Image (cartoon, rainbow, N blue to C red; front, side, top):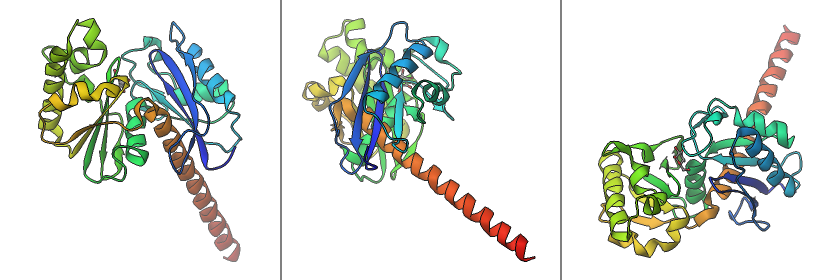
Amino acid sequence: MSKNIAIGVDIGGTGIKAAPVKLKSGKFADERYRIPTPDPSTPDAIARTVAKCIARFEPSRKTAVGVAFPGVIQGGVVKTAANLDQSWIGINLRELIRDYAGHDVYVMNDADAAGFGEHHYGAAHGRDGVVLMTTLGTGIGTALIADGQLVPNTEFGHTMMDGEIAEYWAAESARSRLNLDWDGWIANLQRFYSEMERLLWPDLIIVGGGVSKSHHMFLPHLTLRAPIIPAELRNGAGIVGAAGWAHQAAKREEDRVKSEAKAAAKRAKKAAEA
Ligand code: BGC
């Protein structure tokens, strides 16, 4: 596989989706592959499915692979799993997938991946200032990007609203769960985004998730200070962002190893001279 391509995998509540991504353009290099999320969504069942998705594209040893997960990830370890099996908490996702796939991977939060994707290749391309990415789906995912730097694991979808977390009222899933018509849902979205503006003062807000296809039904009805616009990469943002992020992370790791080796060689030379 060309070194200008990385593989992105997005673990969602209903499907696990993957594609090879051209790093220059953020476009898919091949058709997206999707496998329904196993039920129950246990770590082993999901890791096995992710490995299948990765194998489908036959990565070379050096191909960077990024995996987006719907929960907080710190140091490769899953810290929360609001909409998945609770047995995920404490699992080292990076190691688990590496074991099943036989290939190293980088793991990150799904909304962070989408935000990274939109900032690199989509609606916020090259934007300075504070960009707030939000994904409206089963839950609400958020990513905060300040002057191009991602602040990982923000969970603003869990801000409290009337005794429940905001995603209970304003996620896309709330429409059917609470039997809301567009007006009812828009009222909840307005409260959520107003709270985001009160706390974060973003310069730009991006809205992703499946429902962003119907953005004309709700975005024009929100009154906010910052422009609020639909994601450009739509449902592909998580895949594209995970691939781009993995490529950067692999490059950083490679640079670190090289400079450590260089420093060690320098030290050895000095010691030999002394
Ligand atoms: C999770 C987030 C995730 C979002 C979208 C939320 O319930 O807590 O980590 O990004 O859903 O999947």
